[in-house]
Image 1 (tube, rainbow, N blue to C red):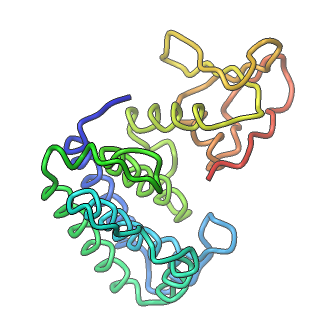
Image 2: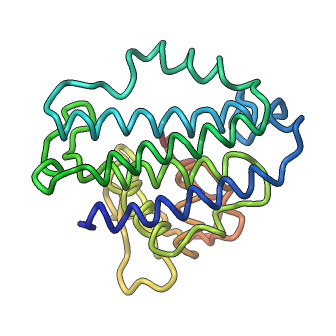
Length: 232
């Protein structure tokens, strides 16, 4: 699915503001409370959202200038940065997300047209894929805060694109999907004899991404939902 990266930046702006509003409704102690991600507090999730924006700013800078600028200095630096920021006061976390988003938005606005075609070897795609990757991070990790925002709140277009991405990335797993509202099925692996799972696109995407238990999905032949591979 090809989408103008600058059009997607509007979606990133809106998704970031939704996440910030959720964070602003929290109390100061929430940063140390468990999130929906095992082993991570709410503060870990918020800090990751901020540092991820900076990581994608680095990639856009690389694409624009041609100077190699990795997303993170190293895998260890990524983890250390999240751990170091997780316990900061809530107000600091919110300001950090907003400022990191502004840096990312500025980097996107500075991209000449030809820079979007620059191939970023670490991502396996061109720079044009970066806004979608950032949108995915914001929307999925908004759910991971474990507060009022759930996959049911995902915009339709986002949920469907996420679902298609997940389907395209799974291997060694056979499944037929019938997202409600689509005229065609989506298949993973070999459809012959594979179970069929039906329901809203949001719900299927949430289940396959490990963000929901699939309780509102139906499976044929009747029985338990299969256990999908771990996504990301």
